[in-house]
Every structure is written in structure tokens, then in C-alpha cells.
Length: 257
Image 1 (cartoon, rainbow, N blue to C red):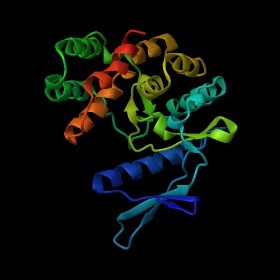
Image 2: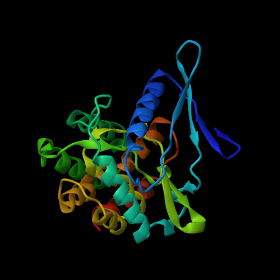
Image 3: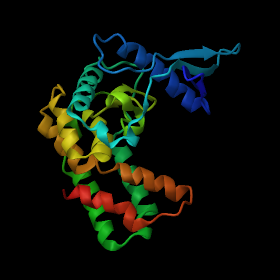
């Protein structure tokens, strides 16, 4: 909820969401301590009732719109800003109030859901392509060789704030899915929404502990392709009409570009 286009109020729907918002507030507090943060992030204040239960969180509005509305956002300067932001986020000391969610078991369950709920609706050729994507990811890499960091967990264009008048990304919002995980995952939404060329520009301005070629390889082979399946599972579970051929067109194009 917005108040006078100055304040944002977020009311958690249930106890689980409230717990995520409390974790988000702690993370944002830690992140705001970083020097010269290149992008604005919410300075989240939590408000509690007399029963000591959280009522809502609020922060000053970051001026701009969702980046997904603007194709021209994919400039070198904006790539630099995101790369520098992710460098600082991923360099945070891993806190004890966060957990790892994207385990091998998580991805195996996700793949089973895709097979159960999506495969019956699509042609066999598309099933093979999806099967190939998941199984290469699940069985051809060793998760123990990847160093985990603090990650945003949902860094898509809808959580990137863009100021059209300046053609500039101004902020990052919604850290409720933040967790301990593979830093490559934070490039997934960028890859899906803006494409591989912009993703590579972001990586060129990113300084992590791993070679950017290795990160990009995981993004290109799996992380940058899997967002479509989250969308499709949501649509299936909510009984929405789906044009399956169109829905998978982008996935297939990006897999082989």
C-alpha cells in the first residue's frame, strides 16, 4: 500500500510471510551498513501491535517503476550498477538468521512437480527438452564445489526500480526470498528478462570469488531458463488458460541461443 506516493506499507498475509519480512528487515539493516551502495534499497521499519505481533513494515518509496516495463533499461551503466550491487550483497558475511532453501532436494521436488503438472499438457518433444535441462543440472554438477553467499533470491525485473526520465536503475526491492545460496541464481531473472548479452555485461562488473565464466555457464544452462516453470506451475494451479506452444517458445529459443 502506498501513502501519498512517499511511504510504502506492507502487511504480511500470514505468520510465514511475517517471519520472512522480519528476516528481510535484518538483512536490509546489514546491507545498508555497506559503504557506497550503488542502488537504493528499502530502509524497512517494522511496526508491532500491543500483542507484540508484527502489523506491517514500511519504508520510504524508491522513486521509479518496475524495470520490466522498460526495454531501454539494459544499458552498460545499468549493468554496472547491478553488478556492483550484487558484488556487495554477495560479499556480506553469512548471517545466522538466514537459511539455505535451494537445496538439491528442492530442485528435485520442483522437477517432479514440473513432470507431474506440466508434462501431461505438452508434446513429447518439449518434454525431452525440459528433461534434458533439469537432468543436466541435477546430475552433472557437484553442489559442494560451489561457494554459497547471501542472495536476493528473486532478482527479476519486477523487483528492479527504474527511473525512466534518467534511463537509470535506481533501486532494488523485495528481499523476502533472500537466502543462502548459489550466487549464480541472482543472475537468473536478469538473464530471463533482459537476455544473455546484458547478463554478461552485469557479470563483467561483478567481483565474486568465482570466475564469471563458471557463473554464466550455470545461468545459461539452467538458472536463466527455469523461471518459466514457476510461472507455468502457478498458472496451472490457478486454472488459468495457457497457450502452451507460446509459453514454451521463449524457453526453447533461449536454450539454444
